[in-house]
Length: 306
Image (cartoon, rainbow, N blue to C red; front, side, top):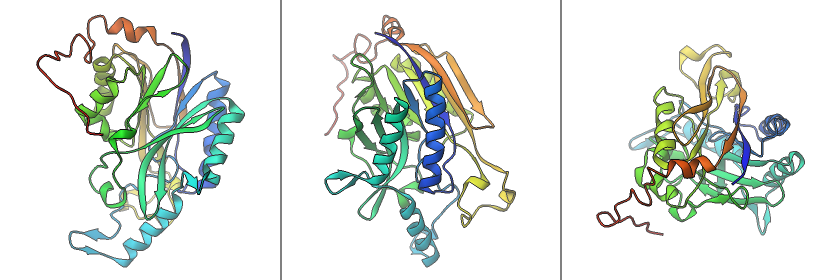
């Protein structure tokens, strides 16, 4: 199995505006490619935006018209994957960036499908374009007000090369033990965790997952200032300064033994780059293969309802 170079891009959605954010995507994709990265991971909701502190005018039993207008604006910032039988214009423009930079892009987006929004991750091959996507199974807290639910059948590995497979769980999906196990059981070498969680506990979670699954873990979070949000976006008073930080990052790369090999990165937009050797995954499974010799399949049964 070859060694490859991977990148994690810690960057902000630009005012929930597709054109501005696409330019940001291109900038970071170029930087990652210039560092010889074959794969670049972008954060959760990088395209479409993460509406931090929004409540969309909702309390139990009541929704305001202002909140519905906020949802309408958020809906307009999301993108569709397809337009009839063709890829949407937005996806085609993202595919063009991957093709021009010769890099595989994995990007968190807000997907629009009918009247429902989904927190989605898309896989963009440099030659084949969009080859897979999956929607977040379980939005967290009030995210459930504005995001629909994904389908477990879409949780499957994607080939980066003929020898290396990867898969993504989004933000707090990573705290769903059975979902993690489902991903491990598909023998991935690269575990992707785009997130909006910048808490101190996130780093330990990513290290635990790397050891548990004997896999490389790449986690990308946004670094967001108030000025990166839409001007009409309502925020608490303590964020009155346009330079105030809403999301402080925390992106990192971890090896299959739990060692942090890049990051964690706080306080700025930047790219983390690391060379990984997927043979390390097999070395780790010598003493811990939780879907193999460590599974005790005589005692436990794991089943996915697809």
